[in-house]
Image 1 (cartoon, rainbow, N blue to C red):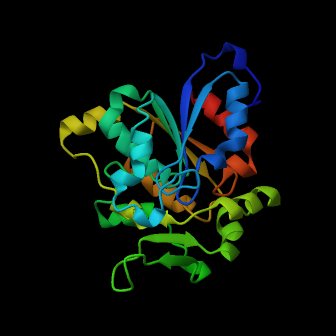
Image 2: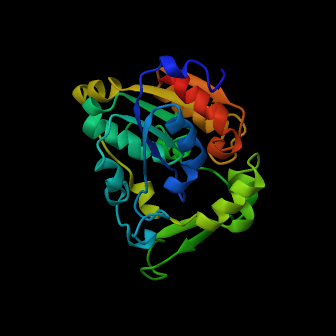
Length: 257
């Protein structure tokens, strides 16, 4: 699809772009420009502890605190990537009547958060093939669980940005921050029939990243099988198509609206 085709025929939407773990609103700068130039209203959000947030990621004690900046927006159409999918799903549980559509870009699409072992297997990246890739911070002391985690700089391009321009991965290496371990406490919603009916009214689109080394294709496929979305698209990129193929990602988003 040509990223510039049929734009004049589309009704403007209000999209909220939700970043993944360690990132921030900054990561959307290329896609933001494309969407705004196409006439859409776009909002970005820094979740608690992100680069544009005043909150220290080590001070975030719960997933609700981490996701509060998104929930406070309460806006109608959302696009999320990576761990940002958890926040978007929580918003769907709370404000499903206000959300027209949810677009997951290589994102954690777990209907009720991390409530089972299978949820953890599907939603938590397994980077063991790369060795010890994480830096942990223990702000409460070594005898307590870690409070934040980050991918070490030498692994960032290998895992997150292997197909992205060097300039973008260099920018990311400056702006990436540790993310709160509170992300792993994400649990929300109810499995009762009424709750399932409410959240299932929100149309979901999943955009798979075929060369993803963070949320691997098989993990994405497992989440899609367990909670089938309305539509599945594929983009031949790394974990960060907003850097590696922003025009094509833009075209897919327009197509899904």
